[in-house]
View 1 (spheres, rainbow, N blue to C red):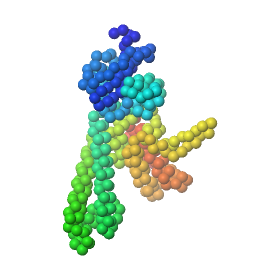
View 2 (tube, rainbow, N blue to C red):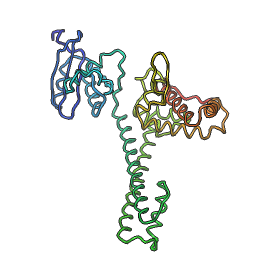
View 3 (cartoon, rainbow, N blue to C red):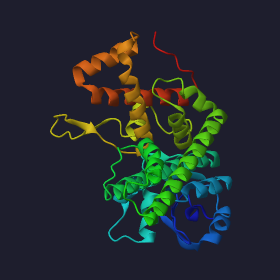
View 4 (cartoon, helix red, strand yellow):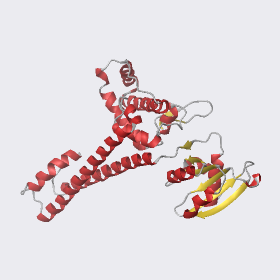
Length: 342
């Protein structure tokens, strides 16, 4: 192939059934603009010389990233919010592919690593558990709301509903009709099924924890449990795409937002960007650490005690979560064991 026609970088706008391609050569001249159906994409790419192929990190991108890597190409996944500034004028699929290709050429662009099948299994497990807990919470609130209309009040919490509903069903003097009792019994059976599903997911997470060597190192960190470390390893692997721990913490939204202008720095609250699920797990774990810190006298505990005194409980919790995120990055990227504070 003529070197001036050879594709050096290719941007692909992913779709369900149709894909749009935009490629440039080493001189940044357009040499390819094409639309392909899903079944022809891999066959077409297999006939191209090895090049950089960029896609947005969206649904299906990990699958295509793995398959295209097998063909000998270098795959780069980009967060969609970093692609948007490069879209010229009107939005269409070809302009999106061109913007992806342009964004991939930036020297300071941040890329997302392609997830392995095992990582996707771990992420799917956590997502299914999360959605099941959400459905259970909605069901519990529905039961409490329906009973409230009959003058029967149940305290908040899943445990309270588990305990009180059987008692209400057995009480023949509470004014509930036989028809409503049947419906309430059906809802209670749904609650029991959801409880069993959550327990099953918890058992699967424990099995995943035993299979992942990286997860077994992370669990030694105070405030990091089995759910947190398996979720982190499934989402980020060895976190090689981050240069340091601060970048990793920033990707989870655990660093302050900035609004600096005119040379006057101004730091706001945490950005809350990135993976909300992992950030929530880290915050909950940090809160458990902060609650028990008064009984300890090691260097880490004294640092937390000073934070609570100077900055308050909530800021101390976020600071501990931030530090744990940085420790997690160091353990994953350097393959080290955690050393507890003396």
